[in-house]
Image 1 (cartoon, rainbow, N blue to C red):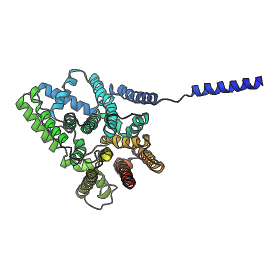
Image 2: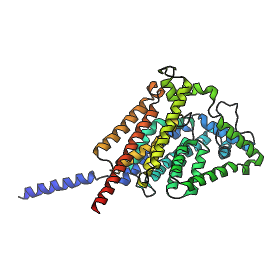
Image 3: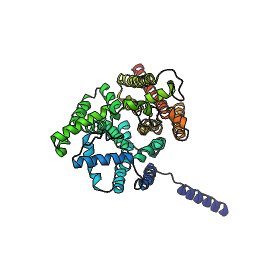
Image 4: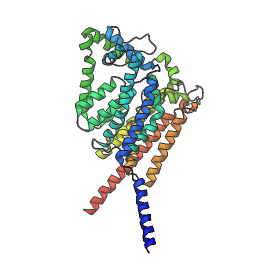
Length: 427
């Protein structure tokens, strides 16, 4: 009996020690581990940033040097001229005060090390509100899914992550009834690249007029601000040159070259490669007609999504519909580069948040998992299989994500209607 009780005590102590050894990891610990993973990922880029040449950052820095010296900012003879508003040339002027490598490392700290976490946090604040709870998978999974598009942004030292961070924080502030902050960030992003325009159109259809008015006011203020640094007449001349550069952003004499470049993942370019008589196309129509058709269909589909969302008066569906609009942002411009597809982090985050919150039933969750996995495989595969990129694998993945988000929206609508019907029946 004594031996039996002693063995029982030993077994119990052994079980206690095992449970202590494999204590469950808290959400906070997992979240810290996720951020440490992001930091490790960025450190690898930081080492490379100090030594490699980044062509886009060189353009930004040269524009800053030109602004500081009182020279013209926009060189229309240059194949890759500076194309952002004059205020950004002034912002880049301090980078010219230090040598290239330290300046490049400083720009990396802003454009990736700060902008990437800001984009992640701002995305969930926009989608879930200011009181959201950030889980580890909400940090890591969308980042893994867009990793294919992050490297090209770093490779050239581009500003796209900063632009997307501005957009998501601007929209988050719009939903929190902070129109001045929202208008400032959205206008500041448009003065770099007009990627926010589909989201602004969505706000317009949702009748958020205060944000739109604030955005216009901030836009005009940011255009006038360089006069404090350059003088009134030079600032006017540079602003005119800026708008001239916008009109010349699609060089018609090189349109065919850009449309056939795999780095151009716009809807018109993909339509040309599929429908015209260029290499690999079916020869159904001319390049000009194929490009026009691709652009019209993409804009028409975007308008249909915005119109259907604006017709939905339930605020609970609002942010899910906004995430669907983000599926068009990488491809709606006549020239849309592969790097713009980092914007897919927002719709990916909406799907991951749905899974993380347990809002989907078993079959719905399986569909979302299948879409996330398949788009990851296709996008990563396009890096190694040239035909995938040539025929627009990232674009068609964005449409698959769009259909999944719209399915989530429709499911939420049906549940809402069923709940109202139950309440009406009970009353």
